[in-house]
Amino acid sequence: QVQLVESGGGLVQAGGSLRLSCAASGITFSTYTIGWYRQAPGKQRESVATFSSGGGTNYADSVKGRFTISRDYAKNTVDLQMNSLKFEDTAVYYCNVQTRRLTLPYNYWGQGTQVTVSS
Image (cartoon, rainbow, N blue to C red):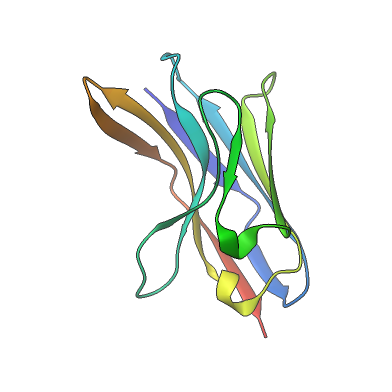
């Protein structure tokens, strides 16, 4: 059973930094993406930064140049370093693993961690 446990959220002033960490376990399939999504109040969940199955990274335009995703294969963790935070970065951040069952995407989610940026 895949388990994703996030940590590192909190309250920060605009312009500050936070680092989120996701500890992943139970991943037995070979092809998947892993990364971070977020959901702000009243908005749809959106992708923030992910690693593709080939190891490449993808970032939302809104966080390029400010956020950096990294991965420690030995520890099975995926971190998100968030710099120059803006009020609009306020959201619940979720760790995500996406694979496929038959031909359909299948998602695993962590419990989420709140990031609040004060203006």
